[in-house]
Length: 50
Image 1 (cartoon, rainbow, N blue to C red):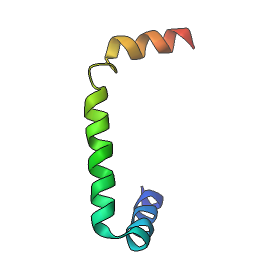
Image 2: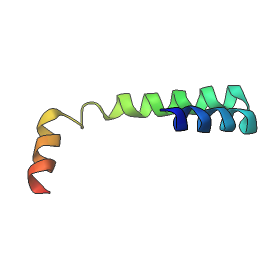
Image 3: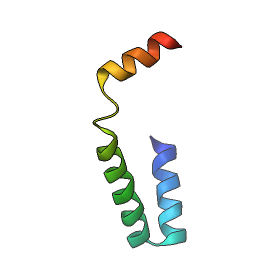
């Protein structure tokens, strides 16, 4: 967790805080869009295959 916070802080200083909020918003929407695909059943099937 501390490394992620440090990386986020450095990126925010480098890119700007508004850009970081935009990037995180896009990533959040992408994760929400994947929710119908990434079900418990699909994860269990992938676990059995590996």
